[in-house]
Figure 1 (cartoon, rainbow, N blue to C red):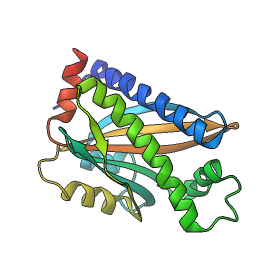
Figure 2 (figure 1 turned 30 degrees about the vertical axis):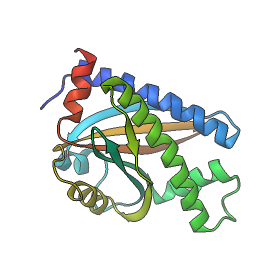
Figure 3 (figure 1 turned 135 degrees about the vertical axis):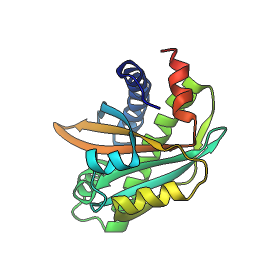
Length: 196
């Protein structure tokens, strides 16, 4: 199903609420003001994903959580290897002296906050409690991560929601991406709930 620009704008408003909640939670965690913008929300097929967002052979750090509840799916928080130091520095302070395992643990925690903030915002709109499972962090090629997430479950939608997050703090910006791989019909349910 193709969605109109108006429907995508409506989804962006929902997602911006989640982004605001996430920024507030992260600000408390790191004791400094964090802003999060969601400049881009797209619904793409899997082939479009690799052409327009990130090639399948790019190595990334991804945190994967399964969505549990009335509606199921998976949510992925993805950053490039270059962004790991920047993100862990935000959470831990000077990251140069931190071991890789500690950095990845910090990314895992950040992802947990971001994912749950977005799921709470989406859940309120579709009137369903969406809970994420314990996150698992992995370092692999983007294509392998998406494929394994998609193939792990039955009855998944052929489209994926791509949410690009832009964190701003201390005059620095950092882009990360969130991917919602929904059970079939969840995206349609979100659009219907908007009444547009």
